[in-house]
Length: 224
Ligand SMILES: Nc1nc2c(ncn2[C@@H]2O[C@H](COP(=O)(O)OP(=O)(O)OP(=O)(O)O)[C@@H](O)[C@H]2O)c(=O)[nH]1
Ligand SMILES: C[C@H](OP(=O)(O)O)C(=O)O
Picture 1: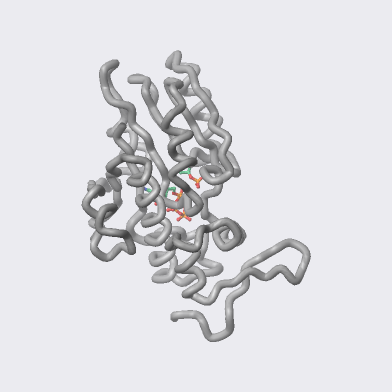
Picture 2: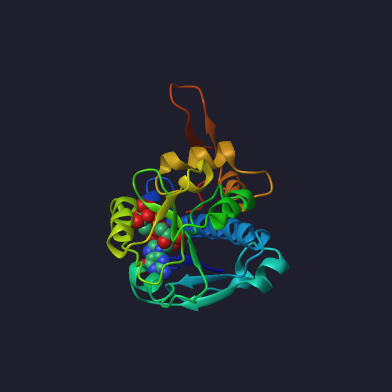
C-alpha cells in the first residue's frame, strides 16, 4: 500500500496562532509529522510526505529507520489536487492511504485497523467533519478536502459506486487544529512521542484547576 502524508511545510497550523508563534507552530507541526511517520513505518509501510515545499528529513526528530523509509515529494498544488494526483487510476492499482500529518495520537494499531479495512474506500473521520485518514482502493474515487469533507467523501463514494466503511477511531479522529486540541496531545500522547515532548519543551502543561481541562503555559516560556 502506498501511504501518502500531506504536509503544509511553510506556515503550518495557522489556527494555533493564539497559542504558538510561527516558528513554534513549525516545530510542533514537524513533531506531529515525526510521530505520524514513525507510526506508518511501524505499521510496515514506507510513507511519502507530499509537502508544499522542500523538507529536510535530517532536521526532523525521527529515528534512522524512519528516515530511510520515508520519501519526500514536493507538490505546490492544493491539498485536494496533490492527493488526487496520487490515488489509484486503474483497477489493478495498489491501494493508496492518505494520513494527515497532524494526527498526533496516531498509533501503529490505529493505522493497522484502518489499513486492514477492505472496503473500496475506508475513512477515519476527524472531529468536526473532516477526513483525517483514508484508504482508497476504487479507481474512480477522488477526494475533496475542507469543510465537512467526511460527508462529501461519503457522497463521492456513492456517486462512483464505491462502498465506504467508516473507521471509528479516537486516535485517528483527533487532529490538532486549535489550541483546545493541545489538551488531547498532553493527555493521550505517549511518553516517547515527539509532539507531547515538543509542547512540554515549549512550557505547556495541563491546567485542570477550572471546569474543563485546558493547557496553560509556564511564565517566561515563550520563545519569541
Ligand atoms: N501537500 C499539502 N498538504 C497540506 C496542504 N494544506 C494542508 N496540508 C496538510 O494537510 C493536513 C490537514 O491540514 P489542515 O489542518 O487542514 O491545515 P493546516 O495547514 O495543517 O493548518 P491550518 O493552517 O490551521 O489550516 C495536514 O497534514 C497539513 O500539513 C496543502 O496545500 N498541500
Ligand atoms: C483537510 C481538512 O482538514 P481539517 O481542516 O478538517 O482539519 C479535511 O479533513 O477536509
